[in-house]
Image (cartoon, rainbow, N blue to C red; front, top):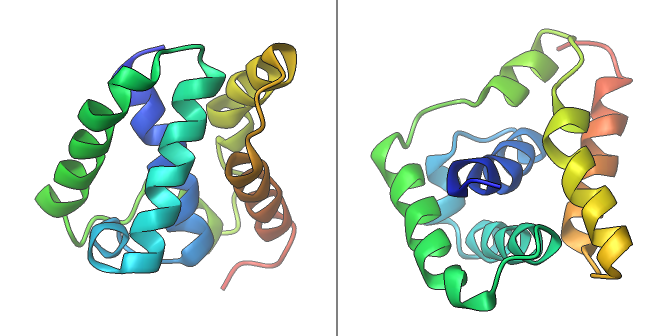
Length: 123
């Protein structure tokens, strides 16, 4: 799995679930911690070594800071009342995590939150 796919798997659902532009994920300490946790889980679920964490984390924070006001496609879909790509984005990682017996509580929570948000009316 590519670094950009891992970044998307952490960034998109978190920003959408919190209804914030991606820049907030780097600015807010609690959201930053959730982002980095989700990223570590995605890396582990993909079967990649922990040595990649520093590079992935730096890339994620740089992406957030480079486009601080960007609202991701998943957030735009939720706001418009459309289904998101959450299954395509997290499904393979969640399946891989189960197969590898790797706990991914943050990714599980994000998948559940987005699924719940998809079922409510558009705002």
